[in-house]
Image (cartoon, rainbow, N blue to C red):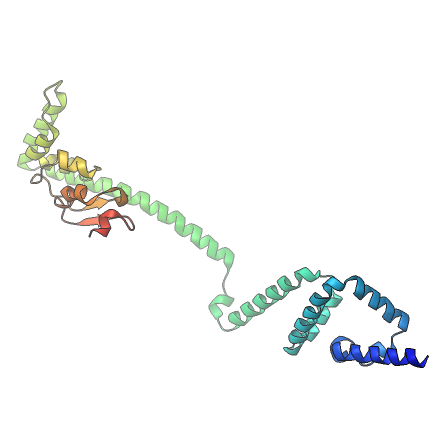
Length: 252
């Protein structure tokens, strides 16, 4: 009996050294626990021995968390029906909720923020922005029509319009496009102030001295080599290049 008692005392000493009571259970609870329950715990611990290191790591983490003031929070989690794998998500949500509440308390504009009203204003702006685009298109058409009508009142306009109509009615023997643009550039640019052409097309159909464009825009400029772009650049007052790190830009 004395030997058994000494072994038990040694066992309690070992447990107290490796599992401090203030971290695991109320003071002296282990000593007051019936031996059969202690034995059941020992068997269960032995059966799950491969998880023992994880359990020790968990206890260390719990101790650190309790040291920064989360003891009550952890106790409520243990008593709740929330699964342990959801605890971190719950903690993160609580952190963000409290953080937002703190930010709102210092910012009256955020406190008054109405998401539904905000989304409504965004949709209204988007709708009106599209309408403005359509209005701008119609406005440009009207401006162009007025510009052309004003040009028709000029003395040289009648002759150029007459010549253009004669070219249109021809069945064959049309004048070359490059020659026609060179001789009558004004009616062409007045009728069509915006041209969609490739750089090589500009070089082929537009004489260098015939037309000077207000602006040349290179779209998809990654497909344009410098030597092909020169012919368009020299015919323009301004240049706009749309593209990223491209051969054309790298050489300029």
